[in-house]
Image (cartoon, rainbow, N blue to C red; front, side):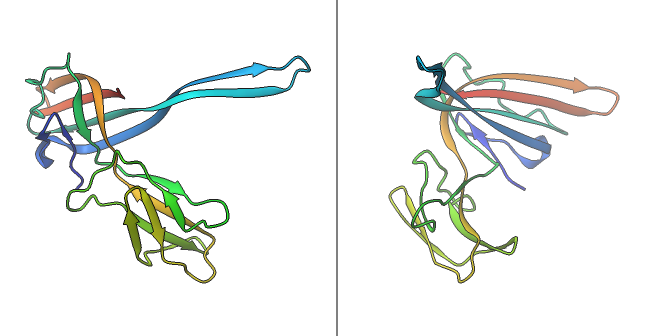
Length: 172
């Protein structure tokens, strides 16, 4: 079971059953047209938006946090980056990632739609995945750790005895 934390509070398993987390890139991207009608994109910045939902037998313990301030979110769901270019087994990974036990970034090689973990080496924010003969592509898997502003909701269903909750977070 994956755990996440917000503002230094680790949410326990009994409060995060039926857990899900979605990610969305938000950006300052604008599409424009040149005089001849050709479309081009101006990309100024990219940040992350994530929504976490779940339920459990206990409230999730985050109602005492100050939601008017920035907080660190240690995500439970991983993201991945596929290697491209001339050295697809060398992948730049975000600095904003978890490094605690069980959440360290790792690399995989995909051969005939089967994942293999050949071993990897991370230096600063560059992962080098050991080459695998016949690999179709390589991926770096990591767990984001980002500073966010968050909004939360919680609800208790008396008939089932279950707490339901959601967090909407945007990277600052």
